[in-house]
Image 1: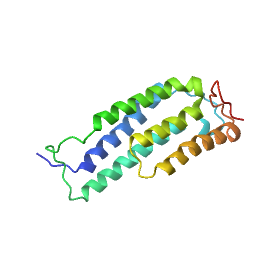
Image 2: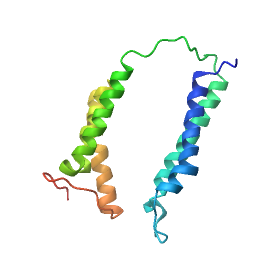
Image 3: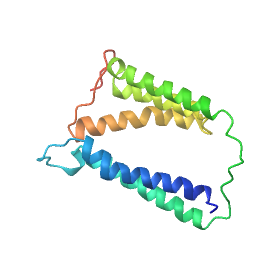
Image 4: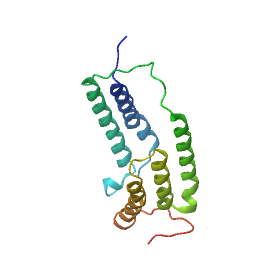
Length: 160
């Protein structure tokens, strides 16, 4: 039996996921108009960008795995609290989808980012809170005022 490196296994899955997204999921389920004037505003641009980055990250992990001495050991125990974190992340994702029409995309994203950072026990909680606020607000500013894309607003607080 071939012993694989842990990074190689993760890389194979990441590259495979990127390939499935690129060749099956995105062409089949992402609709786009034919006359989009700017490629960055096309509904296909960011899914293909993320799929390509997933493939690149996977290839990088495979390369690191080929040059690593660590071996994948099937006898290792599971990570403590992993299933609980997955469960609570699922709750955060469900709450995010529920909060979108009520709070709007920006404020729901702020809360989801902060909750995820605390769920994962960030080493830098203050920086995580700053990023949780700044990233959604700056992205809103770019898409709403530079790109001219309407961002869903909530019922309580409306951004300019």
